[in-house]
Every structure is written in C-alpha cells, then in structure tokens.
Image 1 (cartoon, rainbow, N blue to C red):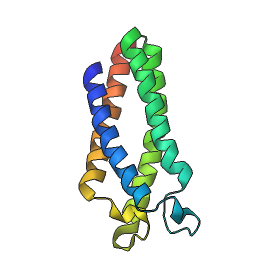
Image 2: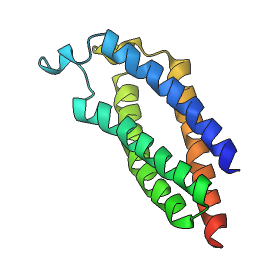
Image 3: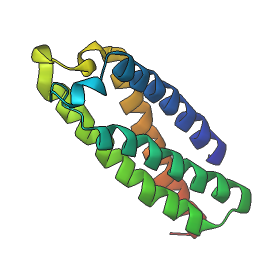
Image 4: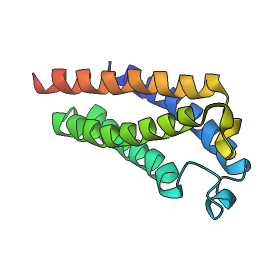
Amino acid sequence: MRLVTIVTWLITAMAGIYLLYLWLSGGGLRQQATKVTRFPTLLIFAHPVLAISALACWVVHVVTLDPLFAWLSFGVLSASALLGFTMFTRWLGAGRHARGAEQRFPVVAVLLHGAVGVVTFVLVLLTAAVASGA
C-alpha cells in the first residue's frame, strides 16, 4: 500500500503541475497586482511546497518503516489539502465569471487532481494507522 500511495501521489502531482503551468502561462503572477486572480501567490506556492514536503516524509517512511514519518507526512499533507480545498472553493465560486488565469483550468484536470489527491490522503491516513498499530 505504501508504493500505491506514492503512485497516486505522483498522478496528483502531475495534474497539479499542469494546473500550475496553466495558471503561470495565463499570467497568474502578473494578475496579482491588479487583483484579477482569486489565487494569492502564497496560496499557489504553499500548496505544492507542503505536498512535496509531505511526499519527502512519506519516502522516508517507506525506506525506514518508521510510523513517525508516516504521521508527519499525514500532518503536512493535511495542511496542503486544506490549501488545495481553499483553491478549489475559490475556483468553484468564480463559476462562469472567472476572470483570472484560473478560468483556463479544464474541469477534468481539476477533478482529477482533487479526486486522486483525496485517494492519496486516505491512503496515507490508513497506512499511517496500520504502521503504528492503531
């Protein structure tokens, strides 16, 4: 289950990198000054930084089988997931009236990123619980 989690994590990351590319290429950073985008720069970059940090903790858990790193990974991933959910609700709230770079996001890519992200979140939680004997 640990390796399946890494695979789902990588699928989530690929969809996320695609969305970040669309946001950046659509002028997301340039739109910050005019407040056109609904996504603050800190939110855009903190989400993947936390996810990558959680993945690093997960890799350490897979290598060492230390449950502490599984729970640390889950905690950091929880923070990343909250930021991701914030971006999703901001994107969803814009609806047809989205004005910023996020209006170019394909619904399929957003849903794939979110759905596989939720699967990854659940797998990390279950694996951490099993690893610690809970």
